[in-house]
View 1 (cartoon, rainbow, N blue to C red):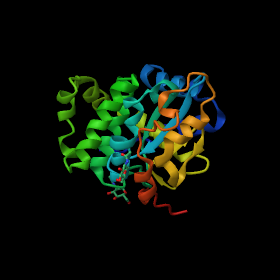
View 2 (cartoon, helix red, strand yellow):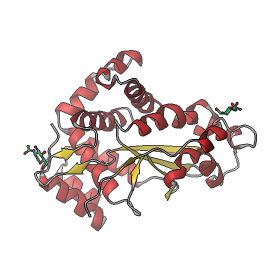
View 3 (tube, rainbow, N blue to C red):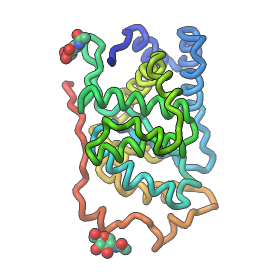
Length: 253
Ligand SMILES: *[C@@H]1O[C@H](CO)[C@@H](O)[C@H](O)[C@H]1NC(C)=O
Ligand SMILES: *[C@@H]1O[C@H](CO)[C@@H](O)[C@H](O)[C@H]1NC(C)=O
């Protein structure tokens, strides 16, 4: 399913390089309010006191699934969410072939589910809503049932219509092209997924300790309970004993 026009890649990458995204995007697709809105909200990322937590991932990397379902979810289960701006970037190690097809690391299902995730983020901008949906799909993946992803609509009482429209209209492909571009411009480049950044600092193989980094990066006065000693909800001895597990990018350069 996943091929897209070279011209849109050109527009997206040149607009990022020149810092003219708003101008060239509105010229390129002035009727496409949804894409512009996403671009605008990710660029004017005024977080106040909040800590920016960014996850680059792909839908079918089992370590991404485990991280989302068992670790990242703690943000919502504690009061950590009060100091965190979490943003998800579903593209990961996908490669754009010479013929413009997308080659997803775990096959075409992953291309579809990355696009579904991109659509979820777009049609349900509320973090709690799109996170629950993505978490539901990743949970199915941990049980080898990702092909049942559409059951998440019923599980969460969400309408499938906006997601189906997003995919069939081509909006999903355009959203993914934006995430592809953003991932390609990571500096330093990602080496694997999950690739986690806290206020622009890549945590690399220490990503499972993201709570510590978030708490240390926080400069505000309303320190959440989750940041106070003794109350870390993530069992750090479990993390210390586990080998960081990741899906490596296969780079030709
Ligand atoms: C595009 O190229 C990839 C990798 O070379 C190949 O697997 C795929 O079949 C090609 N797709 C089309 C539509 O030609
Ligand atoms: C943390 O995990 C370790 C190893 O699984 C376990 O032995 C320990 O009881 C756990 N600690 C807490 C506080 O849950």
